[in-house]
Length: 316
Image (tube, rainbow, N blue to C red; front, side, top):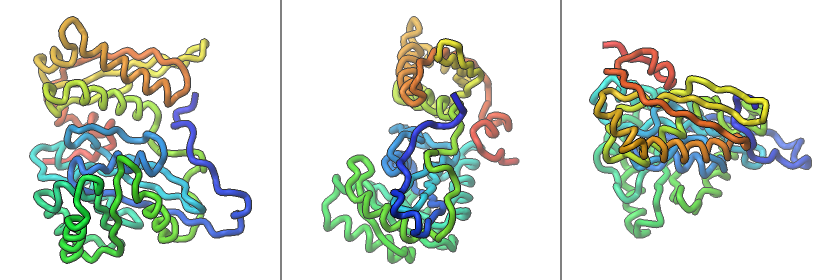
């Protein structure tokens, strides 16, 4: 088993080989819980980034790769942009804006239910400094009246000169095809950056850790604070075709360790079972998953943890 995420979209038909190919990077930015990860998974057609109702779930840039017609679209799922309070927060917000400035196109994803209040209002102001072409996407349109969507789109376009506005639902897929059509035609002509069967640049070890972190959040989002982190420490391919994975869940205090373990180990067992099932489905091979919980005080100030997450450690 290679350290790549298997399977992916089918390549373009042979009849199209003479048609120029397009490729490029599309950065998705937005407030926390705007639906960026859900949208990336929808557009790629497979799970490449984790989804959780807990805010600030995505911590580093995850690239999901979609093939649409003759275009390879590399979506950059960035951390949600919010007012930072800690070192980790600052690193995430810096990473998000850095991803926007490195992309060919920048997409602002807005939760239509929440509108332009709070963090989204601040992001609109920040976008004025971004030179790349900008696209507005209103998400969760199935929950908002059409007249309210039009007002929302008008207000956003009064602040920032968006090239286009799209209205879609990442959850249902409504409007996603038109969005892909536009991106495929708008990205510059050029060769593809990745093999046609690759759907992410995230190593499988890291994706497996992210899946476990997702299950941790889903199980304990009301009890376990945001300060938890998962690392894959061992990955052993076995002769019987299975893989043995050992992961460590880092928390900051002993009380948090007790929450992660749960009464008589119930919580950690449930998290392990859910994570093992999903990792096994992605790998298409049996998985033996072993989880350990360790207390590492102030891990949010440890440069090594930031490197593991793909973040630059902010000094000061």
